[in-house]
Image (cartoon, rainbow, N blue to C red):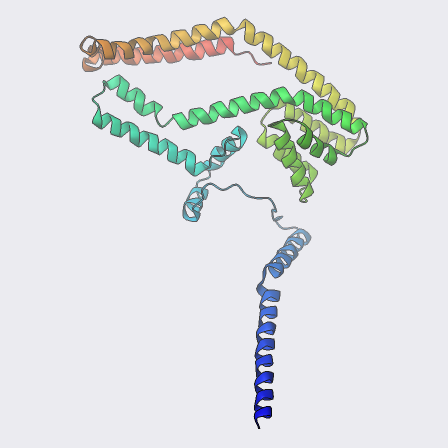
Length: 324
């Protein structure tokens, strides 16, 4: 009797183990990670076969680490341009961090205004400059990065041409540029190669490259590659011609920058001198200068002076900015 009971207990234990194992196998086969990946691939194939919208396999940039704030920011289509600026600048900020920095600096300026009694012009300049600092840093980083990319572009075009003459495919050449050349151009070409490696069409990957690097010379190169893929031709020779053209253009820009240095320095001095004198007089002798914002005629003169400064800045900018 004890032997029969022991055998029954062992068989019952084995049956429970097999039942749990079967339930786990069923759950992982229908709801597990592998099953979800297979279902996602089937949906992707179905949408391609039906001619519907193609599902993306690329990682989407996030506006915020918080899901709630992410959904709220995604509802504002204007922030897509801000995220594009952040992507082009190479900064690791998110849209939420940029907006949060602007709001924080604005609140700090308001708190400083409540604590310290500042003259009206200083207060206005502080409230205007404080929330603009993150944006100024963003545009400065974007301009510097695009300038470095523009300087590296002729060398990248020569690298592409030499590798194509050696017999490599265009996708492998993109990988070689991403591995061999310095930043920041290597990262952009590496990202284009990874997109192609993940299954993105070549045309779309090159369009994304031109979107991340809004340079006219790079767009010319992308257009040349796309036309060559459609109509054929010697792509290596074409890239060599683009490299020589970009180098000649950069040389002419350097000469123009040297010749217009005096005008740019004059523009900076004439723009900042009235503002600097106003701030200095506000600190040294505020009673003497306060008539400009306490008297109606003084306020009108300040508006006229601000308009004249803006008009002068625009006129000097037009004179010294020569597009090549």
